[in-house]
Image (cartoon, rainbow, N blue to C red; front, side):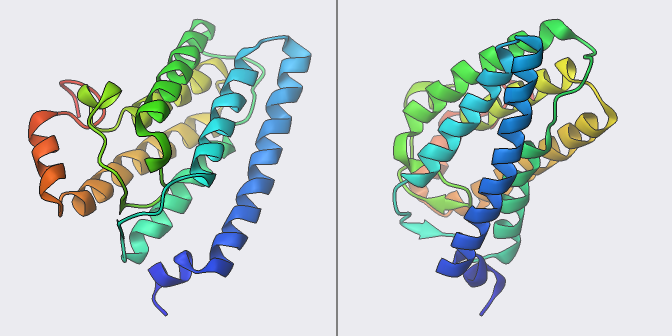
Length: 205
């Protein structure tokens, strides 16, 4: 059994789901506690958007094709876990950056509504979306993650959170490149790539 098949197996999915549930629960409890101490609703917003992401993942559609590369699966799992390593800090470099979390949350919900049940964790072809926010960039959902992560790091600045931010950004970029390599096998997606030039940030990437 290769790595991709191992990750895709029923047992692995259950184990990964169980581990993610524990990590997410710890993450959520820490942020709820931070809200109780500070009264800052931004912690609840950040937890809420991550919860919605988990919900959409549970009801995602069955893919038409899915990557068989073990590296893609390992990257997807690492990228998914990394964001749950953010923890509340006593101070922030730029408290006003909390606005980025709210903006990221709004864009995340918009991206999910556009993507609907075609959301997934690993490179897979489900239904190619070209409407809504997908007219602006090819990965608006990832763009919303980037905004939220940046806002969280700037409002909860610590060496650990700066490191987590750097790791999540690197993993995010790698996931996009690997996903598009898989999706570009489809002619319709190549047409979409020609129409929407930018992956994540207009005029940047």
